Image (cartoon, rainbow, N blue to C red; front, side):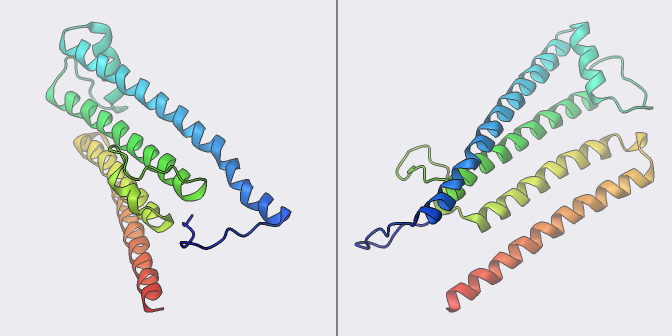
Length: 200
């Protein structure tokens, strides 16, 4: 969605064009649904954090919940809170934060790009990336966020590498590289498109 050039009169839309253009508001319930999903992630984050603190303070129920959350089927279950268990829980919390960041980018960037301007120019809390967001920038940022999330999952798998077979480790690594190559392809394609626009 772009601003009109200065002093250019607004053209009146035909009823059909006005209906088609107004259909963009059908996306609003989708973004509201993502906000609710964000609330679920916030709740999940605090539940995991409270259990981690409770386990560190010796609460047996919190410890059981933490171990159930990070244990891999077939692996030896730890009987106490050790460094690896803490690391896996913290990686899970980071994973939640990164997915939450992804949701924010989709909600704010998608709404600003495809539905309606939010007029945040000059607002002290305006995200830096939102000042130049468009569909191409949003795609690239989403791809980079997905790579970050995939990296967290891959790291969690490698920490428990002894509990996985080689095929699982190989497939997860290949999938991560597929995400990486996809992001590079998106960024390269957008660069070609931008250079083509500059030449014209």
